[in-house]
Length: 84
Image (cartoon, rainbow, N blue to C red; front, side):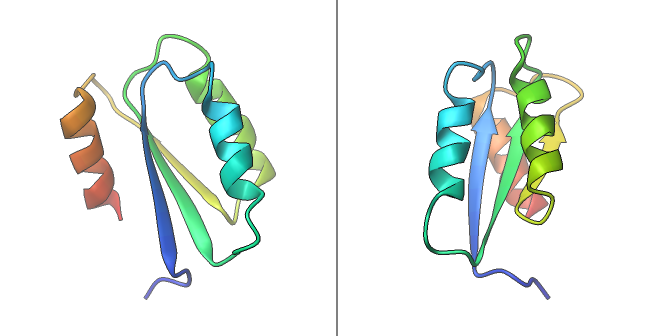
């Protein structure tokens, strides 16, 4: 049984430019009963490194996954839904 009421799903690929802003916006909400679940689709920029930093800083709020091979937008999001 899950201990949170809302799952925020983010499927990402080369999102280095905006991922910090997205995560900060979610983390700064007053509602606290949520988990952020992120699946990276083989980014070639620093997206996954940024995700790891946020995961380490917010262990109870963030889960991250990284694909072994690039799936594309739709398949990456479908896999993300399966993860929940």
